[in-house]
Image (cartoon, rainbow, N blue to C red; front, side, top):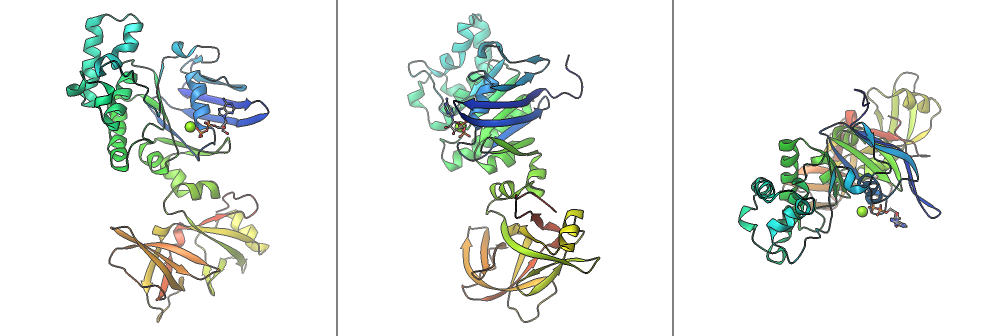
Length: 371
Ligand SMILES: Nc1ncnc2c1ncn2[C@@H]1O[C@H](COP(=O)(O)OP(=O)(O)O)[C@@H](O)[C@H]1O
Ligand SMILES: [Mg+2]
């Protein structure tokens, strides 16, 4: 029986070993019904292997995967009530779009009029009705991707799996399809597990993100949790663009306030964690992290405020709407995000104000968050 506190999909302490190599280690992730779980991580971290185990193309070496009230272990892929959309769309080249979408139903013996109705429904939702008579070779990449999704949709599965479905598309189309997939999820309310190495896709699509690296889950949380309170340096670096700024800093304390030293300024921390208090009592060093949007850069260094760092502009990267300004020296440098009307030149004197409520601290030994 599924109890109210057990998740709809439960990847329950799963390990996977190929030969001698453990490619996934103790993966434990739950997804509520109707949720959108994104597995994100660098190439080779084990995302596809995990998805293939949910689909039934691979078997866990250890652990269990449950969907609803039953275990998937031992079930053939066709018995799992799961539909998968792959990165390569694998459409049948000789069949037209309608037949590609309806093929699975045909092999399952679904009657022709039912098939037709279902194909039309899905085609309408994906806005591909005008394409139903075309062959895959007559479609653009984005249209093929829609057909591949249509083929999965007609099955009304309990769970959708997507393995990097947009990585073959150009940037513009990727954004359009991302919005369509999100709309589809909002409309149908189906449960989805979606694999990507693209942190923006993860942030925009997910209700829940699992960040993987080298076969391990480094953090599971909402997009906000992952972005605002990354559990370790890897997650902090991987999520967000540009990557979070980092600097080693020595902690100090006078017994009550905790301070850090940066560019000859001593900055007082707001609400330091207990861990930071005890590290400061031992005058230990930690890794400071701050995102580009949490630094305000002003030109000139005449009247330096408390909490402002006097640094020299190293380069400016215009992106259209924003300018990313790098300032510092060999030892210490920060990238900050500014509006496109802030346009300093290399070598200009600047002052950087860090948002003291948006600082992250990590342990230099294991990279785990300490505050
Ligand atoms: N069938 C297999 N046999 C041996 N090693 C495999 C097999 N499938 C995947 N691997 C290895 O497992 C690791 C994870 O692969 P994969 O799940 O495809 O990563 P990702 O999808 O995150 O890029 C890689 O090191 C890959 O080489
Ligand atoms: Mg993969």
